[in-house]
Length: 489
Ligand code: FAD
Ligand code: 2HG
Ligand code: ZN
Image (cartoon, rainbow, N blue to C red; front, side, top):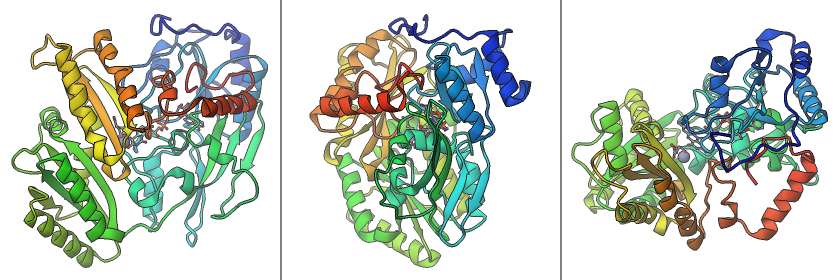
């Protein structure tokens, strides 16, 4: 492939023919459920399925199928398995590791039409819905009933709940509601041979044997396709407050986190960190005024969610007074209304997009014990400077290194902002970044997954025994290897 000269298409997979396409057309009931690039030129229609959100990964799929029911997914997979056609399950295609797009000519199975909300229990909070439901749609549905989806992230307007579970997305509310491993109560999934695994349990407790659904959470479409989910949804907090802080050092950000946990305790629902460069870039790209006057090396966004507005606001103000009085925090504001809360969150959520605004970005999504978490940013910055790759003018490929993320979960996003992609930059970054993480017993993938981007680096965070067991699981569930090949392991 021109795009991936280092990867070879696996000859065991069949080439798509018009006969294959005819099968899918017949099965799915006509033209609207497929995009056929086999019998005609459909490159333009196919582009949004072939290319990822960052425009970094691009495959050459010639067929997209859009099932509407679990039975259709089952028949598609069985046919592909019997005919050795490789497939890529695709949700909202917002994944950041190249996992959601084909590498070669894999059939794209888009889950977009499986978007129904099936049932909601207003007493227990359990929500049963199709994997293709957009996260924001599900959250809006819940908001109207006084509940909240236990996950939130910047891509909420496009990503699917099935994609979220397939990547085990973490996001902005994990600090409060925990990981999807806890929130997913039940799941229906289809195995590559067409077997439907119905574990659509709506109970919180169920210790009857191995919890097989857990394997699909974070499996990135490598062992089967998630078709339906049951999610445990918490009550939506009637009182939400947001504060935005400026801090003089990472040390102080750690102290502020400690204080926030102590003083805000049960109402603390998010603690996000952003460095100075990330904020400067948002300001430059969006042209909006910074939330605080003056510039600081670090900023934190703190959210509280509770049941009593006045009490929570007072608690947050008292916290702010305290940390500003002790010089832990240099400056801070508390949002005065829902519009300000929304715009502070929008400011934070725009960092991933803005970091790609100057031509490209190398993204590393890592977990590192808190004490060391930010030091990877200056280390990588120094290394790029030393190599003569980072500078102010256009002759340098690298503009700067940005660090931000979910401090409350020890999860940093290191974004190396570039003016153009360059192999020399890549060589300086990899495997250096992964070795750096390994030395500190961190994780090379905190919440975005492995996809194509990290499949060669898994050994930096998992030992041989574990990788061996993972390979056995893959072999057991997908003996023909048709599910999302060339990625993950
Ligand atoms: P896709 O991108 O379509 O797919 C992702 C992977 O899941 C692929 O391997 C695909 O094959 C597989 N897959 C998709 N659907 C299914 C299914 N039904 N069954 C089996 N496999 C499936 N991630 C975080 O964790 N936290 C964040 O805060 C966060 N913020 C983001 C902000 C932005 C602006 C963007 C663009 C991305 C962000 N992400 C974040 C990345 C995150 O992985 C995705 O946004 C989301 O979880 C992917 O969902 P999706 O529906 O777009 O899946
Ligand atoms: C976030 O926290 C996302 O905003 C995206 O996980 C991070 O783009 C990134 O590196
Ligand atoms: Zn994140």
